Length: 500
Image (cartoon, rainbow, N blue to C red; front, top):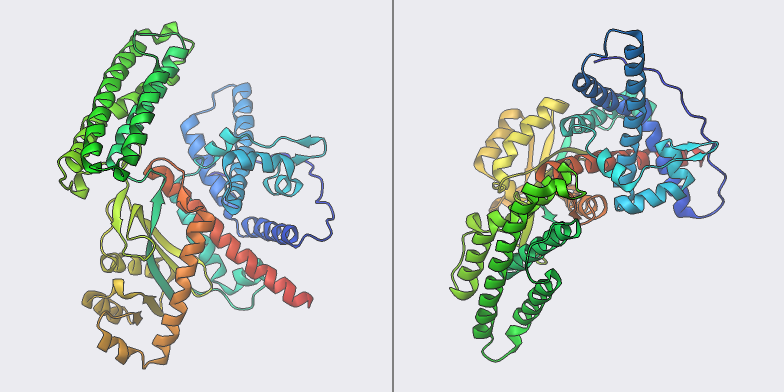
C-alpha cells in the first residue's frame, strides 16, 4: 500500500461554547469521541489509503515530464482530501439517519458537523451537495468497509487498544456471542398484483413525458390523460371490494387496466426507438438518453409477466409460486420472507444475520442476496468466521431457530459452550437448570433490542438504496457507524465516571 501523500490542513475555527441543551451536548461529545476513535485507531487512514490506491491504479502512470508528475501528485492529494471528507460524511449520514438532502442542509447550518467532516474554514464553509453525498457512499469498496469493522473490534479487544481508545482497563473481548436473524425490508410497494400494472404504466408515462419535453414527439393521446385514466382505474379497483358483486367488478376493472397497460407499453416502445435514433436532436446527453431508454426497457421486459401474474391471481384466482412472482419492477433481489411474527406474518426484503458480543458491538453479519436458508444452516459458516477472525469463542447463544443436532456437535467439537435454545421443551427444562445457560439466554434477549435499534435507527426502517450491491454497502456503513456509536458511549461513560 502506498504512503499517504501530505497535504495542507485547512485552518478550522474551534467549536464554540454552548451552554445547556443536553441533546446537543450529548451529540457533541459523541462526535468528539468518534473523531478520536477513527483517528487514533487508524481506521480512517486505512480506508482512505485503500481507496486512494485503487484510484491510483485506475488513473495509471502520471507521465514522464515533471509538469505531468506534479499535476498527478496534486490530483492525488486532492483525492485524499475528498476521500477523508467522504468517509466522515458517511459516518455522519448513518449517525443522523436523515436523507441526503436534509444532511446537506444540516452540514451547511451546523458548525459542529462542519468541524466533524472538516469543511469549516476561517473564511466560511463549503459543505457537499446532496448529489455529492450520494456519491460519497460508493467511494469505498464494500469489502474494505466490512474489513474495517472487524479491525476496529479487534483493536478494542486488546488491553492497549481498549486503554488508548476508550480509557478502559479491560479489553472488549469477543468471547460470548449472541446471534439472530431478521428481515431488512425493501423500499417497495406492497406487492398487490394490479399495483405492478399501475407502477409500470406510471413509469412509462413519466418517461414518455420526459422525452416529449426534450423535443421528440410521436402522435399519442395526451400523457396526462393516460395518467388520469390509470388513476381512475386504480381507485375503482381499490373500492370494488365495498360494492355488491365486488369480485366480478374487480375482474372487469382489471381487464380495462390490462388494456391500458398494454397500450402504454406500445407507446413506450415507439418512444424508446425514436429516442435511440434521434437523441442527437434533443438537448439530452448520451448518458441521459441511455438512462431513459434503460428505464423504459426494464418495464417493457417485465410488463407481459406482470400482466399474466395479475390475470392469474385476480381473474383466474390461481396462486403464483413465490419463485415465479414479481415483487417489484425495480428491485430484483428481494424475496418473500415468512417470519411468523405477530406484527408481520410475511415481509418483503432480504434476510440479515447479526452477531454481537456482550458489550453490544456487532462483530459479524451477512445480508443475503438470495432466499435465506434456515437459521440452522447459517450457523456453521458464521461460527467458523468468528473463530477465524477473533480467535477462541467461549459461548454462543441463539434462539431455537438455530438448533440442530449438527450445530450441537459442531460446538462440542470446537469446545464452545452451547447456549442455543433447544426446540424440545423437555430438553429446554433440563438445560434451564444450568445457571450459565440461563444467564446467556437472558442476555440474548437484548439482541432483539439490538436488532431493533439497528433496523429502526441506523437503517431507518427500510433502506432507500437501490440494488443489492448498494444495499450491502449501506448495511456495512451502518454497522461501522453503530459500532463507533457504541464505543463512543462507552468512552463517554468512562470520562463521566472519572470526572465524578
